[in-house]
Image (tube, each protein chain N blue to C red):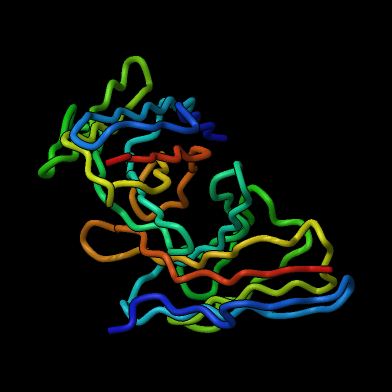
Amino acid sequence: GENVEQHPSTLSVQEGDSAVIKCTYSDSASNYFPWYKQELGKRPQLIIDIRSNVGEKKDQRIAVTLNKTAKHFSLHITETQPEDSAVYFCAATRHPGYALNFGKGTSLLVTP
Amino acid sequence: NAGVTQTPKFQVLKTGQSMTLQCAQDMNHNSMYWYRQDPGMGLRLIYYSASEGTTDKGEVPNGYNVSRLNKREFSLRLESAAPSQTSVYFCASSGGARETQYFGPGTRLLVL
């Protein structure tokens, strides 16, 4: 089955700095890579996703890049703000609508 | 439009007791999922249902059963609860044009 590894497990940045979270996956047939943000005590919520026919996608301060050859993808958050503090999960699956295989999460802390 | 709802929000069980976690979605999604979330482990798939009338095992199905009662509802049953099943349980559904997966608010289960 698919194995998704996520690094780092914790990340602390100062407000205004950039944050990068990296994930690797094992199944070369995976084609859909969503990122979820989970605030303390809340449900995971989708913040951005990318499909294998695209190498990069941006949405305001958030961007995701995908390297299918190397089987890794990354989340980039620019100009971080304290409200970006949360746990971020990457996931991979063969098709949107299939069950997701999650990484173990990155706890991001943005300090003022 | 409530999205994905779960009941109960919190439950304490004694070892050996049984209970059913309820999940419902009002988005007309075909696929539904049950995940468990443990500290440092990310989200792990317990069972999923690709459509009404079908269910399949995920990564950690032992000790659980599921029922896809109809298109809206997908329940998770613990027949004989064990302390190892102490966790936060999330239900999710996916569908629509982009097949985005949406999560419920979670059920916190403590087994003593």
